[in-house]
Length: 346
Image (cartoon, rainbow, N blue to C red; front, side, top):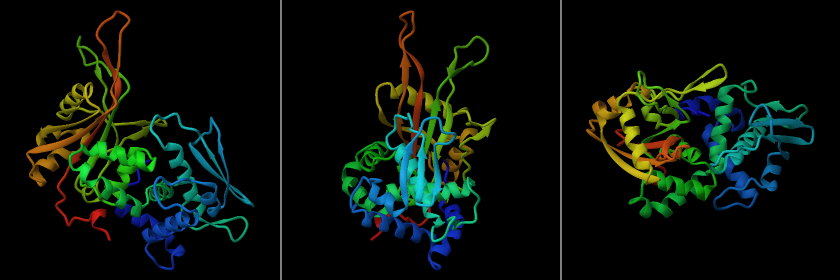
C-alpha cells in the first residue's frame, strides 16, 4: 500500500476534524494511540494487539481465514466489530499485525452510539484515501513516535558506523514490524531519514534479444520518499493492469548499479556502494539521478544496500546461477531544507 506524502495525508485527514473539536488530525491520531497504549498497559516496544487493546476499539473477535478475497475486512455487529484476516505467507515479520492494526483503524472511524454505526468520514468503503488514512494510523500504532525516538537514541552510537539498512532492520525487529513499514514511518511520516529507499525485485529472467543469455528482469516494486522531494522527483511504484500490478522495469544506467549490487550481495547481506550521481539517471526512477546530480550538486552518491538474492543449481551440475530475489537501495540525500527530524523533538 502506498500512503503518499505527509502533505497528502494532512489533506486527507481533514475529515477527522469532527473528532477532535478543531485540533489537527495528526494530533488526534497521536492522542488516540497514546490512549490505546496507556489503557492497555503498554509502555515499551513491541506494541501487542492484546484483547485489552482490541476491547478499547470494540473489536470483539479476530478470525484468521484462508481464501478471503481481501487481506483483511471489518464486519459490524451490534455487540462490536469482527475482523477477518487472511494469514500471510510472507517471510517478513509482522504483516498479520499490520493488517489487524489497519482494520482496528477502520473500527475507530465509526460512531457507535447508535445502530447501525455511522461513519465519521465521508469516504466510501474501500476508497483509496480512506485506506491510506488507516494505513497511516496502523504505522502510528505499531511504531509510536515517542517509542521510536527512544529506540533511535538507544542505537544512535552503533548506527553511526552501521549500514543504514541494517540499523533499520534491527529497529524493525525491535518493534516486530516489516522493515518497509518502519521505513515509511522514518522517511515519510516523521522525516527522520533524509534518504530515498527503493526496492527492486526479480522473479523471472527475460530474453535480452538476439542470441544473448537471458537477463534478470529487475523491477521497481516499492519506495519510500521524503515529502519534500515528491514535487521535484516522480518515482512510480507501479500500476495495475488486468488486476495485477505492473511495476516499471529497471533499465538504463541504474541497471548497472543493480548488477553491481547483485554481484556483491552474493557475499554480503548488507553492504555500501559509492557510485557517480549520473549512474542513477534512468527513466525507471523518473529522473532521480538527474535531480541528485544537478539540484543537489552531488557527484558521488552513497548507497546502502540490503539483499535477498536467491540462486539455484542446475540439473547438469553447472555453477549456481541467479534465480531472483530483491535488492534494496538507500540513497543518502542531504536535506536542502530546514532539518526536521524526530531526534530534535523534545
